[in-house]
Length: 101
Image 1 (tube, rainbow, N blue to C red):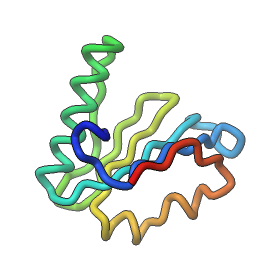
Image 2: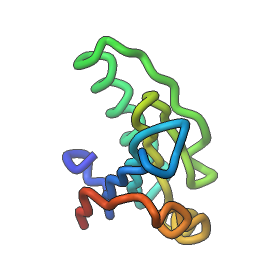
Image 3: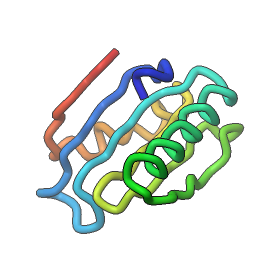
Image 4: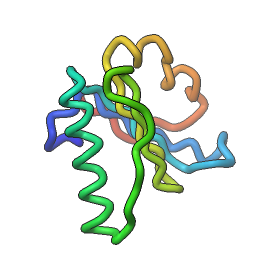
């Protein structure tokens, strides 16, 4: 995500508070095109490095896209949608492992 210029990247360890996944990656994209590029990059990475095709749900025009990699769920947000949904606050009992601006 960092290579594709995602902003405010956060990795949360939510294993202790979640039964459906172990980690959240949350990041911002500054435009619809950037959100599409970030999700496309993740698809390519998962396919080439892990031989695992993934689907991304949501639409960049809505400002929130999500990819489920089983143990990792990746959230791509516009800045406004990220602020509105406040996932970091919602999952604040998780452990913040990485935070990149």
